[in-house]
Length: 373
Image (tube, rainbow, N blue to C red; front, top):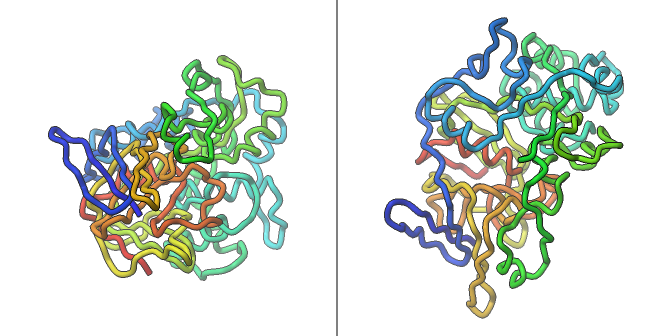
């Protein structure tokens, strides 16, 4: 159960029952739309991310402004890539071909770029990739299948600007990248409450989250890397997030997917999620978004009624985002363990990867409808 405290000009308290969140910043309300084709342009009018910049949106809409504050800008090149990275960038799927790790990485990238999240990119065909494919099929009026087919691949690759952008890219580590704060996260809540922040536990964990990739895959792509400032590493290119304002989301318990819709009820994005558990089921019915908080803290209430405030950070129990609902104690939030999304229980809330939660935070409307099905 959750409580959330929000800071504004005057301290406003949203009183829930047993857990408390305090945000250091509140995401901007998004009312305007930015077309993804206008996100970042080069003079050659290439894809939003093939010109060497991801997650940098142009325009002065509230969506673009909010997302630019929430997501890191990623500048990259395609120089000095390994032969295997080049192979992944150029690979294509053919009917009846096995989905090996090269095809799997390309497929996950295409689904992500169409705003159907797969969780941490790892190159493997699995539960979250299948769900993302089915959400893409649903959004595009295709037959829903359990395996990749020619019709789906054709739809995924028909946008030449998306298809030709690189999946794996070269990125030069900066001082800011390597000087992130790290800590050891204890298991005990008392010890957690004494930390300065719920930071990453390692540099590679921080980098993996920045590039929306599994930590193991990041290391395997860079087996000889020391991860020091100035070093050039190979990373996954996350592309740009959905910039259309979200007016309605549906948390589907059966598929463990959060579906996002625009004002015309078009499906515009999907995110793998964990929705409740047997012990702590999610609510039913329809609710609304009441509060949006970036970098929340977390207050655990013990059985004896004592409270412990756990500081903000990506490894906070609710990750980097809290989107509180009109249903007291429930919300949509991030996660300290992105690899376990759809593979773990939650305390009745909707759990996303931190990057999906941040992307949603930047575009979901205040008062948006949240349905549990």
